[in-house]
Image (cartoon, rainbow, N blue to C red; front, top):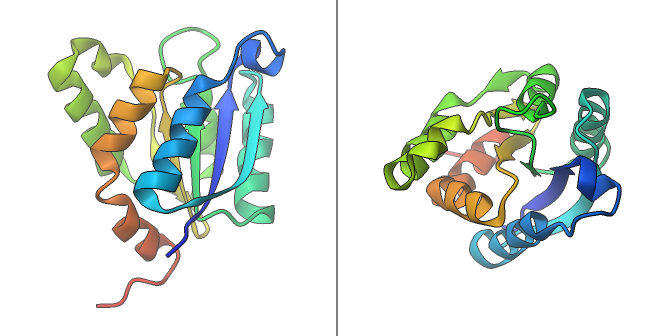
Length: 161
């Protein structure tokens, strides 16, 4: 199964072209190599709720991604609003996946408890918030990678008992 995947980076500096988006590259590599997915859309937006919301809706409703992976905007800074924007887009949360990411990362680094990312479903799309650093992306995505195929089968309506 090739999962249609979209990547959304929330970063003021990235949107202005002042920072290279190395976290999205880590996502791309993990999706293509570990999940067998195909990147169908990639976008960088500033840390503005309305822009994040619009991008998530377009990626889910227009591009019909099976999976949207966001990076950035998930910590405690005042401009970190990705989880709040995601909550306004999703129809149902998948708290166990977000808890698994926090739990796994916090075992190695107590600062992992500062990660506020959520996981949720919009239509037939799974949306996963990831941190904004390459290391954080890798650790958090690795924590749920083994369950992503089954979750995507369920969300997309392809799971059969």
